Length: 332
Ligand code: 2P0
Image (tube, rainbow, N blue to C red):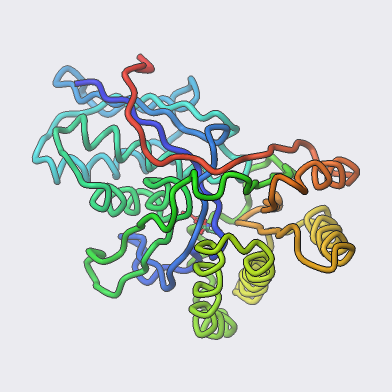
């Protein structure tokens, strides 16, 4: 049976960084994200077929490289074990955005693959089970199973059975929220998230981050519930600063922000000062591209500011989007 699933990327307000278990992608702390609209999307079709001698993975029209292919095969092995099947699969996947643009393609990629492959293997998983499965593919993928605002519960158990995402509020709840994305670099990052998360364990600041993160989670959760942008904004920016401070404090040091990123930070702070309240909040993942959360009212102004910054290559304005969906428009 051929199954096609669609998943959108998500951009965290409180970030996942550091694993208590690398095999199962179990984090140290809860994280909170918004799922993006269909501009940041992966569509994946999977079919298990007895005629195949090995798994075949096609990403954006070309055969996956060795590293990508090994990661997909390892994930398919998890699904084959769960479904008690031995068949090989063909996986065809298409992103609506460049794979290594720092736009979290692994989140939408593994969420779509988890959904398509588990169903194609005959499993009928609940959203929570699907979230746990996607997490094994890539941590942040567990959040892309759901739309709107999503929290990933870190959990405490060693087997990961209490580490999954759930929806805090549906996409239609905060219709005028936007993420203005400034693409600064489309190069593949030099230090992968996987490697960066290993190094963070050497950071003395990391234990301090974990002590203060619960308060930040509480503020953001509450701001989402009450649609209080100003309250959420400062917490988002402090969280991003804290994350990148911890990255720099890792050994060997990890540094993802560029001069252009720092210029964007400066401009957002100036904009907020001019309003005497936060109307925009920057956040950066494992790369120099900026994600500026704001409301529709201030969107054009932010786009204008970003366009004037030397080094900003492209701007994408994203709304809040849906979780996993299935489609009958197969890719092969
Ligand atoms: C996040 N990031 O919460 C954080 C913020 C990057 C910075 O999740 O090794 O690709 O596949 O579990 O999910 C990127 O890491 O890592 C990430 P793996 P993933 O969105």
